[in-house]
Length: 375
Image 1: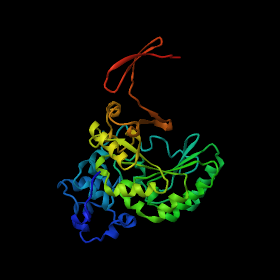
Image 2: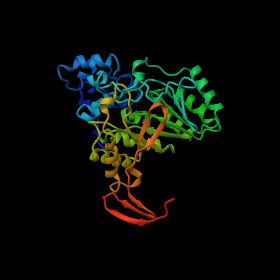
Image 3: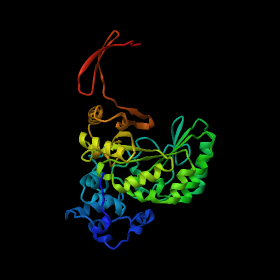
């Protein structure tokens, strides 16, 4: 966990006079996002030839980041790589195999809903994020105007959920739903909460990473406390993203009885090393966030330069096994094209089967023969 000193933000020129109450206000963070090349060069040093790259790429896949997150990123390359536009995003040769919507999310029964599994539905409420991650699997939203669903659109989505009684879990996503005002967010949660057959309301958000002050907001915490079906799933990719501000925010969330899980994406040049992901999982557990998924990077156009060899994740899982308890080991998963769903990717610990004798290997690569009934 990075321990940020008091008034750390005042070390950077744009915010040297910003008082603490402003800096730690989530709405101020969103309202003062950096969105242009001119904004960024006030905070970090950039190569002379980068201006054209930034403007060419961000004119297609736009850029945005909170002051808090650019502070974390300004001297940390793994974080910078997650937010700075690069020419590879629009290189036709690198991105040739990618698709703008590889999982067919836009083939919706109702606009905004993706219903892939019988018991779960994705409920997309906005295409706005306070930080636009370059590896985003919904990078198509970068091409659209920033807007949230209207009440009329949401009501049609609620009607669909009500009519489909097999749906037990709704995943509120976007964009980032926690960038919405509290009143609109509660309208969404309340309507889902009072549908009898909904057991779990899962909120997918990166605000805990890029704007932890969202969870300093008493009104949001009251909403979490009031509607106890809520689970929060966040998205840390690197241990340098976890700070003492994160720890305070998580403590606030847990005080409402809301569990916190994490999804990480395996990203080339950012976290595709055993030691980095081991440190990330340990750091998450220290602040009481449960590692949930490690995703193989999706085949989304504009993102393919982040993809590793698929075996890299299996090698990392093998490294984690035996070094971390089960609490810290995520499920390594691949999202299949054409909306076919997620599949887990696992190391094979069975070396040989011979009748009822099975040869296993352990995390140290030692083998042992065990007599077990098979089939």
